[in-house]
View (cartoon, rainbow over the protein chains, first blue to last red):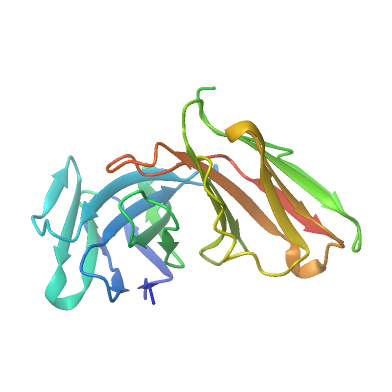
Length: 115
Length: 114
């Protein structure tokens, strides 16, 4: 069965610090997809990234980077030089279907960036 | 439309009453999903519609919950005989159903059962 674990329920860092959000997943499939979503205080979920299980290359997008390691079943998310606007709940998620149906979400990590 | 639209944004209802929550997906999106987010919890999958295929209802928590999608577009989630534990934010999302797009979520309906 699919499962996504985000062990950190809440993190607080001071602005400009780097912060890493952990995500560990479980799946019996060899083909699967991993996601990160951001939920700012406004409540609307924003898609950040999707990776497939065959592509373990790390990805960088501006201040955001993702580290996918199949050996440890982890898909961690790092924000470099954090800003107050990064304050949100971040969800890691997993899907075993290439049409994106039935994405299973972790419980989320609430990130506070303190000015 | 430009985004996924949900209505109402807030709903307060008395225990035992029925409620209907509406979702208007992005035009052209063939896939539509309903999730529930209880306070401090993650997103719980409820139901998924893809084109003309039979919906995946495996996440519906009880037979008091049902959903329809008319004409491959608008969807209605109905909760009958509401209970206090039904209080949550109900989120709808739609997608093109193809690799790389992810979901686009609506702003949700906050349901409070008193």
